[in-house]
Image 1 (cartoon, helix red, strand yellow):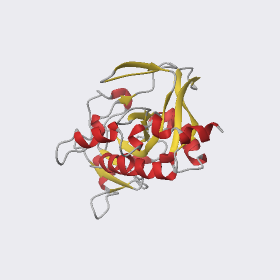
Image 2 (cartoon, rainbow, N blue to C red):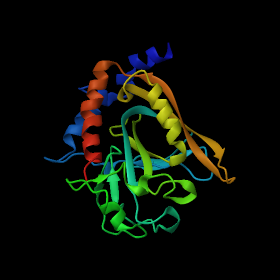
Image 3 (cartoon, rainbow, N blue to C red):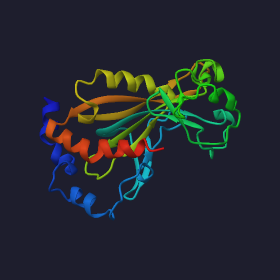
Image 4 (tube, rainbow, N blue to C red):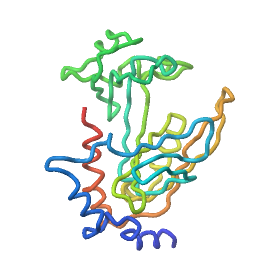
Length: 245
């Protein structure tokens, strides 16, 4: 019953889904000819460190602290990245050496190979210049620290919150990947029809270190007409922008 109420009120809670809304008008009016929203323009929200249970972020409307982030999951994007140095030795300013959006083909985007052996990457180069991610040694378990991989598996979630024109971006850390994967597989609608909430729980790893894990929950769903508008307005253009090399 609650899901039905969510569906009925969607255009009120998410006015950009209504073609005659002020937000929809602003999206069309505030871009110069040829401009589009870039991923780098969106507000990014990070999982807190040390087992924190509160999301914190800032945007043009001010500072926010919330126990839950709720919104339409307009884009769910997987990504693999290979960085020139291990996390412990990173300066935080490097560019990835390699990026893949499907786990099959990787694209070289950096020329600083740092701790990496370039010949290992060259050995699995495809004829079209991409890298075979399935055969890449750095994408095998045991290539990284503590038996992990040098290649980082990532997932990025884009949530359109109520009464906002553009989604926020949540980068899912490795320790929350299984939670998100399992949740998405169980959804009974395409993800861009799902209204979800993201909360946090305090957990402890095998070394006794506390961390925050994302807990996703299904809140409601869009109808098919609203989902088409979400796909056209957000999912496809943001997905195309995300996958630009």
